[in-house]
Image (cartoon, rainbow, N blue to C red):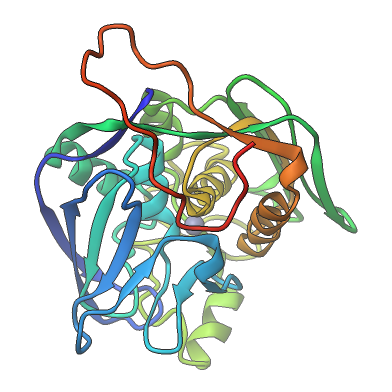
Length: 307
Ligand SMILES: [Zn+2]
């Protein structure tokens, strides 16, 4: 896929916010080339726009929250994962509240919604971050690092001292088809005692067995069980793909993560944007059948030197 994409037509859905428990309406609109992914708080005066950029991350403790002093939007990662997994570079995403609806806790419903919208190729090339030097961050047993590779590849490992999770590892090159089948349906998960503690603090008020895998000390409380035996590590990959969409362009490189979190993903994106000697922005050759004249891409919405 060398050209930027948007969606063909507007689509919408309604759900609840996992933290507020309140209903929220989501409307995704097509957007022009080089405009990127932008959230709009349609419920606030002046409908403030919040660009989906790592520089706009204001919190990454429980979910990824983007914003500024005037407006924020939380739990953006599963929708961004679906957009990135399907190669949608440009979209205007209106939300009627401070959270993206959680739906079933995975990206499967967002994938269906985007497929229903259809995809439109735009007459501008897509750029990629081509990594030439490794970048690594580690904190104790947590690690995230990337090394050069011709495609985006991810290896993710988690280790939870729980009989249904334990050690899980997965490596894949997520193309649209594998993303939709292997990653998008994996749901978020939480431990009953953490959910109860969060709810006592007024958080996770919308959290239930309908939108998360909930575990007690022995097993999974959801009566339907798991969608994959390693659903947990698959969900971590979904979170990673969603968070990486905040770079603005896809990454070509092999990313390895051990015991990752939204906060670690965010630290990695900051390190990558700072270590400009480790990568260059690369526009692959255009498709030979493409006859329209191509213009140089517009300046990037963040300050980076083009190598
Ligand atoms: Zn998640």
